[in-house]
Image (cartoon, rainbow, N blue to C red):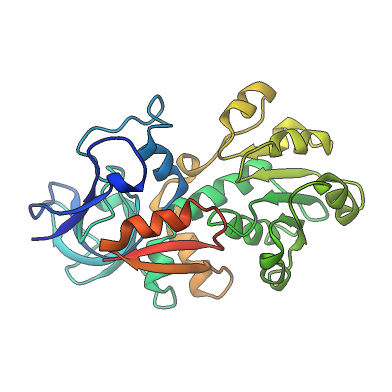
Length: 306
């Protein structure tokens, strides 16, 4: 029988189980995909722990996961544009991609280009669409300076690259161990911690035009202290600060489409965008994967490989 990750109550990584499940059948407009890779994301931690129950409640037993890449196993009625055996990238809206087999709406799939690895393809949707939306929200222009917090994380590592493509100067807040990677991608690295405001002002020549917060913990307030206008600040995590200060919260939902996914995959295929892969785990080690993610010091993406 195929396997899937399940949890039947809110809690830490210990609530995650890999269980046998019945083989799903795709309905009209749907595709059954055999998963080759599926990324994991911090938002899934918040949902599993119950911290987002008011916004995104879980129904138990709950599956998890949105990102996926794999091979078309079966087509539902009325599906055209895909064939059995085709390699695809996509996303699930039903918290179900951490599994051997997953049913996906055909409209949420796009072909996998040959130059996109399974690991990059399988972890592209959540981080990629979020970064795409965040950069679009603050609209950096050539000659401007944009700062990204958590600049080496899953979303941040893509946001800095997409921001660079606008012609803006990009400053990335990250730990010392990630500074070399940021420099290699044309980003000016700045260490987090005490004195970060002064370091940003020195790196920017005293002017910051836009700010993308992927980490939380006071970066919205820092952006305001740097003189950035609220409409040029986007946070994907600090919703309380966003409500208090009137900054933007555009993230994954604002760019959740197969069209955006295809555009990001094209950039990867052409060598214009990199998805750093921190580590891969087999599905049965899903607890270990999330334990590493929750330490919040990962460069790029952690990926499950069923």
